[in-house]
Length: 552
Ligand code: B12
Ligand code: SF4
Image (cartoon, rainbow, N blue to C red):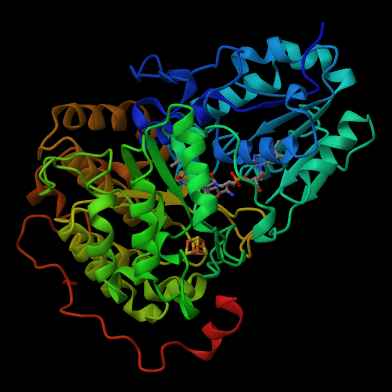
């Protein structure tokens, strides 16, 4: 009986902020559900409910949807919950259920790769979690009189896997939803038919509402869109805009009022905030922003999400200016940090490739105003600047971009080798042709097709990460575990091309590995690339091609 007219749901794995650790969510997206127990993975997807049973924190996008609905419907009609409370809120009176999907089937880049180490059909934990929402008995029992609407950045995955009808989803909402949500849910509540899919457009700044309740990690949007035009990215063509400081601070206050002590600045690129023309970094505005957030009573920690490398190289002063808050108030600590409390700022940066040719083909706007051929220098210099100020970035690379050759891979390996003493995390991912991007029709890369050089890149990254995060050069767990994995499963799934690369991550002797791998870790050869003294800004600033389409 009863129930709320509108129920919004997000999975536990996408809502949890257990230990304020963004890594945890990534882990849930990579660990195979079937073997999680066997691997002794701590699956604590800690969430909290309010006294009325509603969720205390859910992904920010869902909070925005809630805020939009509360402009149209009375608060008594809307509930936001985790799957565990769905039977409490979905009932006879429910007419619409809205579900948030960040990475619902676990097939986004990075995430989609790792579960496949255990077989082609193995699903990560978060996909299993999402399926449980879709098959929840309360949802199924009341489906005949309610409309099921799914939205969020990962909605494309449901279409991609042709699951819309299987799960009886009435409407899939792609993209930004500010202009859509109220009308769509009103139609659902009135029992009118819904379109099978809706494509949201970039909203006017003023129509992005303030959230009413707390989001996961204390997420606060500071910018939306990007405009650098990378062809594989779903955000690429959304023009960058900054939210007004008052709006941002109101969201921060909404979080702390409900018990959050940590704020995560959500952006595609931190340095886009209040940018000047042609991506000019606005240091005073950024400094003001961070100081104002840190000064809100109740805010203990401030985390930053994504950024790009070229602004760091172009205006290194920005890192000096932001470090007191970004490092000093960070939640992250590492013994290699020289900060008095060993804190470090973690910024997610897409480095993607070390090949200027591929860079020029698919992402030339990312290095602006530097030229694609300068990309390796931009990466090396940027890393030096960041590390000096205790920013230890979390960098993603894309393997298997269309038309990638062995020569491109060797260039990526050269760059990776030059970064071997940096303080960072290197996350290899495979190319995924995301819907709504200019590369949506290109062929995705598959773990099963990786070449020896690609495997070398993959495992060299993980060797670095194991050393950096376990704070020691040799870790027995991996030294023993990786060869066992290779002989029991890896060889059967991926063939011999992964062998020597996996053994490198297991720290087999380098005098032996150097005969089989491209990079020589014996110390006999110097890196082909070195950190440049400086990276000159091209005199014309950019090429005409960049000025037009790609930087729109
Ligand atoms: C913060 C963040 C994270 C955080 C926290 C996520 C969380 N659960 O809170 C962390 C670091 C953990 C994370 C992890 C991952 N993330 Co993430 N993340 C983001 C980021 C930077 C911000 C998300 C956000 O709050 N945006 C602001 C809100 C307002 O936007 P929104 O969520 O899209 O919501 C709007 C619409 O989608 C829609 N909407 C949302 N929910 C709903 C629900 C309904 C019912 C309806 C109708 C509409 C609707 O309305 C909202 C308003 O317009 C975005 C990039 C971005 N700027 O969006 C990437 C992004 C969403 N992440 C991405 C990816 C790939 C991942 C990972 C899979 C792997 C990775 N490489 O990092 C993991 C997987 C996590 C998992 N659980 O499986 C990609 C998704 C690409 C894609 N199209 O599939 C993005 C776009 C980054 C990028 N540039 O590529 N992420
Ligand atoms: S820099 Fe490129 S990959 Fe990053 S958000 Fe902008 S367009 Fe997407």
